[in-house]
Image (cartoon, rainbow, N blue to C red):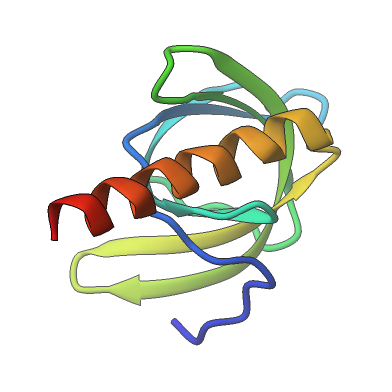
Length: 115
């Protein structure tokens, strides 16, 4: 997938549940997060998702805290036997975006102290 993200991607051990916001389509979808940035998220999902669709997302971060936001599906790419998606955050507040950045700073510091 061509890099188009405005912010640095970080690998983050998180769990996310998404639910489409369209009327009549409220099925909750577990997805496998690949990476996260301040502006969006990369993930794989067993179901085919529509480009441009909006999902409500509950992201459980490393502190076990839940960040609630919306994501807009902007990219789709077939990789081996799975579909990888790229989505931008819609309405992610600065406080929650900063939590992602803080995690990245701690990880970079840990790597430089151990490496």
